[in-house]
Amino acid sequence: MLGRFLEWAAGKIRIQVQGASTERFLNICLRGEIQLWDVKRIDARTLTATISLRDFYRLRGLMGRSGCRVHALTKKGLPFWIKRLRKRPALLGGFIALFGVLVLLGQFLWVLEITAAPGVPMGKLRQVLRESGIYEGAYLGAIETDVARRAIQTEVPEAGVITITYIGNAMRVEVEASTPTPEQLDRATPTGLVAARPGVISGATITGGDLLVKPGDAVETGTLLVSSAVPNTTEWGVPHRTHGMGRVMAYTNRTADFICPLNWVKQTPKQKVRTQYALILGNHRINLYLGSGITTGSCDKIIEKTRLSIGSRLMLPISLVRQTYREQDATPMTGDAQAVGEAVAVRFLENLEQTIDGKILESSWQAEEQDGAVRVHVTVSCEEQIAAEMIDHTPLPEKPQTEDGQP
Image 1 (cartoon, rainbow, N blue to C red):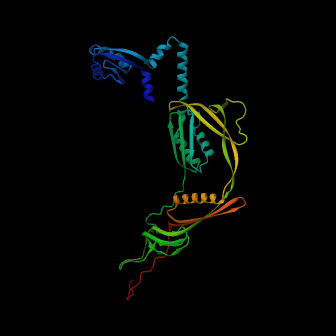
Image 2: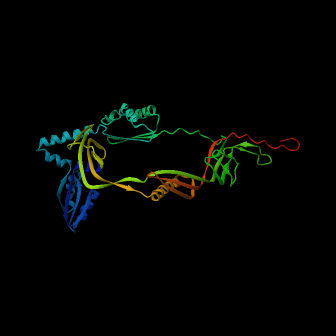
Image 3: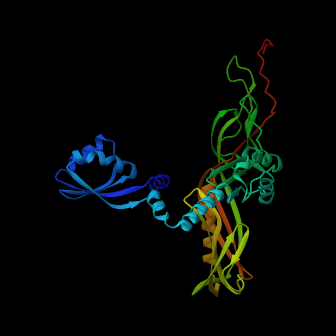
């Protein structure tokens, strides 16, 4: 975009070259560092090309050696446009004034996009940004992003990582939610593994600690699976503590209950569509229609907002709003209990399969109709990893003594 604007501002001419040796003309341009683009050959003696205004004047001194004639076909660009406007001073003055207004508008912030993670209060965030000088209509030269970032960190404790980026006179603020810093359990901390849910052990892979369970053992939630206290394992070994790590797999059962309505209303759009337009100038809205924009009855309302801009870096404080209304036919619908139950069970299994650290072995579901609704009970058998790390203070086992009483 910027490159095309610079070409237009410098001026360019579309030329036609005729002669017995157009190749000599191209070689002369190459040696003279005269740039040609969009070259097209018409026939053996004729070609067309585009050249900048500056190179066109330089070309005049080289044409005697080329044996070709050059004709200007079209002239485009700011120099030619200003030359035509010299006879119309009012129009030229209006253009200069418009250019000045656009330059002035480009010095202000007109588009402020704020994206906040769930849990971050949007109202408080907007208030802190405004107090820090970041709001639509603010002068770009007075905005200090470091000050705004520190203010958000101080006033909005829910905010975590803060990213503020510019694109011309548009700004994007992204705020991630702060997450409590988990207690760092380094390798020197004695930790064990406990069961996060009940199940029957199917296998384990341990890289630290003392495994206390074996395949076939039934465990409950909170049962210690791996202890940090390791007994002596060699003749010269001594009991010691370690950092328990690994994976413990178990067969588990999961159940879930859902209640879904059997009667609902299906909305079918009609062919009749009504459209309204409005202009937003800064913070003021100008409706270009009569009456109200409030919908009545069963009707879909689609709002499209288009910000006017020049290129991708100069945003204007003008937006066009298009409101489309499409009437809907409301049709009462009644579902089958078994079909609804199957759809609910399938959705639950899909979500579980994406989140479980393991695999689903088998599943079943039952649907029972109750008072215009269906109650769905889903049972799932899984094999999953159930070990969770926690600090362990299990006493160290005593090292057995020999017959002479020495340890």
